[in-house]
Amino acid sequence: MHHQKTTAYQPNAESEPAILSIAGSDPSGGAGIQADIKTFSAIGVFGCAAITCLTAQNTRGVVAFQPVEPAFVRRQIELVLEDLRVTHIKIGMVGAGPVAAAINAALTGFKGEVICDPILAATGGQALFNQEELADLLEHIIDRATVITPNLPELQTLTNHPCGRPEEALTAARTLFSRFTKLRTVIIKGGHLDETSGHVTDYLMQRTNQSDEPRIKSAAHPRIATINTHGTGCTFASAFAAFHLITGDDEQAFRKTVGFMDQLLVRSSKLKMGHGHGPLFHHLLRK
Ligand code: PLP
Image: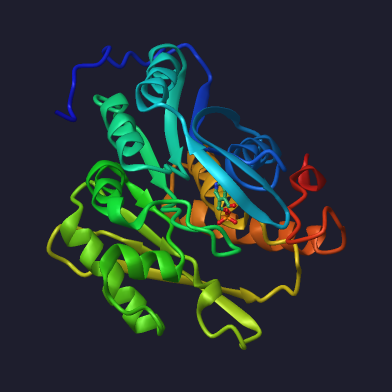
């Protein structure tokens, strides 16, 4: 049912490489595809976007969202993949189970990187994915991912394991490797761990081979005091995709992403936009 035939994936070898973001739209410009495209441009790669959901929101929070018709989501993705040389796909907000199935169908035959930011709720707590359809997200999206970038609450929901301490989070992430065979790398964003600490530690876990323990690297960095945190999750996953396109290496991409986020959060902390949780100001880092 879910694996309908699609147009053959025909990468155009002469084209420049591109990253396709499959995500929701945030009209206030802080998160979703708007954040993704800004991140790609700030880092210097070509970005394109297929929209899964429309949201109505501003910096004060998400008021409503409306998933795009699944067949139309699929068509957007197929037409881009038929034509552009997409080497990396970044998946953000999916919004609904049938949209997850449509994305999966559209990716039939895609051989590149699939970086998944498993978005379940907005920073303000509003649900962005129906919990009852979580099985669709796991079956159609996480199962496609080569890399996933959960924060701790997302990791806890995906694995059903407690993630209150670093060892628990690493144990939870290990279960993803045994469950999802295409998954090579899990990046755990540590922002929710010990929120009183002045430091944040992010973890990179890489599958070595199917039976071995994953290789674990970490990056500790200062916790930045700022109200402008809207879209940090989207930006992190997009930055990783962009740096991976440039370097072809998980660890380099991870370290560059952590440095990029630190710089962006510090620079953005000095500016004000809107009345609530402001966005990141990607254009400050343009080269
Ligand atoms: N994608 C969309 C369209 C959103 O509206 C939001 C949050 O409001 C997110 C993703 C998640 O944002 P963040 O990067 O802050 O986790």
